[in-house]
Image (cartoon, rainbow over all chains, first blue to last red; front, side, top):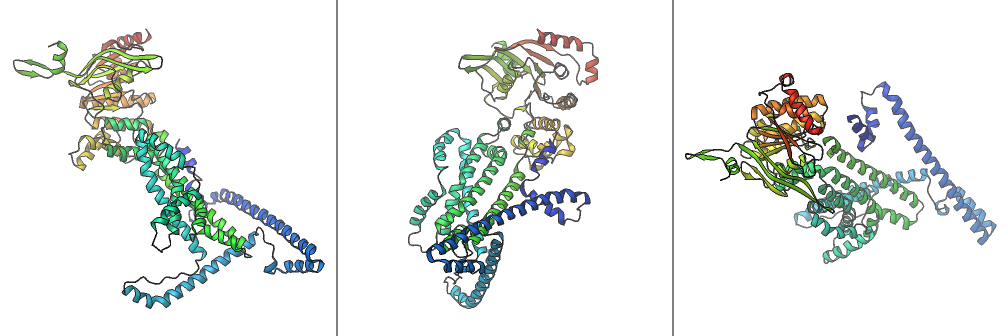
Length: 366
Length: 274
């Protein structure tokens, strides 16, 4: 049984970092090398295969697009224009490049651009702050607001905004869903009273949640010129994502092992003690499963909501790049896609580790 | 005054009150489960009086209603008819005056062994200091032979060790009556023997009135002052009662070598096979 548990936990949570950690620990033994190489070799191979397929695919799409452009020039403007177009494409001139799925190298280059851009903006910001330091000090002394940098946000800032939004939304979901879940889990009559509410609102799309939150927040912010995009987006994210936690908490609380309840009854624990010493600890694993789903849902709906709310995050970034239609816009979108994926993966793994920490094997105790 | 009331409330002679010797009194106990096809009577006309400092084991076929009876005494299962009284006071719901050792250890798996015992101790001795309560819990964990495992999570303990914690938890709350629902049924026979020894050792010291359900004829004889045999359900009641007159403290060896042992054993088996 013990063996099973450890095996199960292998490959979960942050265990995927193990080979990496093992590599840098001095205890690394010779015998571990072969399985480690095998494991990471397979991963590496699959990454290479993926990149290769991507490269070939984007090349094929590029050719289709290029041929279409040349063909079009030929039919509309004749042979000379077609030759000019062909030369232009071959020369790598940015104005006539076919616009399609970018290749891995283009995406990599875009990533470099975005990082370089971030450095430039950071330098700008630092310069600005330095320049304004004296003025700001005076303003603050007079009790006025300091002047802050309001230039373009860099890619790193955008990612940080998104992470901030998702955490604020997650926290909101937690604060709403866990207490309500506990309350309706404890009382069967409240549970049936709330059931229709949950069933109806659970499947509502993120876009509609956004609109609902927008209606309310807009009214509440009347006369306030400050930017409410962040508030709208985190509340919408929280409302979209809280349902899994709500349902799981209610289920966990209502399905506590009868033996534990009997023990609590025999010992005549008070309501408070019964909830905090018996019911909540025993439903923690289910609550955390819910929270994990909530976090991943929050991250997933975040992009759409940021786009709608015009919040300076990844969602808006992707949309603006798409509208922008610049030569490297597509590549930047793909960069954002990977960043979104990787952050989502990391968030999920962090939650899984927390979940493993709080869970106990229920079957063992019975 | 009927004899029954005298037994329950104690007797008065020449102005001196002699306290009753009856700890637990079941009279005309009835349990009915309503089903779509009409009522299903589990227990009917069950009468049993258990004296102070008595250890009673209850034996009977599976499904005869032993566990139902025990959980009614514990107050976890409502009574359909009749009465249950502890020291003359009718039972209304569960409470720590009736400690229960469940069939499964029912420990909170997220707590350590000590915390599990403390959960009850804190409840029963709210005015004791923290250190005193800890001492009580530790004392009973020591008694069940878990000296090194105070801070082990319940989940890390084996079934047998978990049930030891269960025993410690039940004794530590100093109940008036101890109810044991086949506590060793899930253990292998070796561990079962060990735990029987531990149980009887603590019991010899504390002398808490105990009612224990078991399937095991040898266990029933070894532990009990009286073995209560229940008839098969539906409408189960007490079929026969056997007094076990071995001296206490007992050892397994002395019991097995006693001349009466096989007479008792035969009596029980005859009843069960009948």
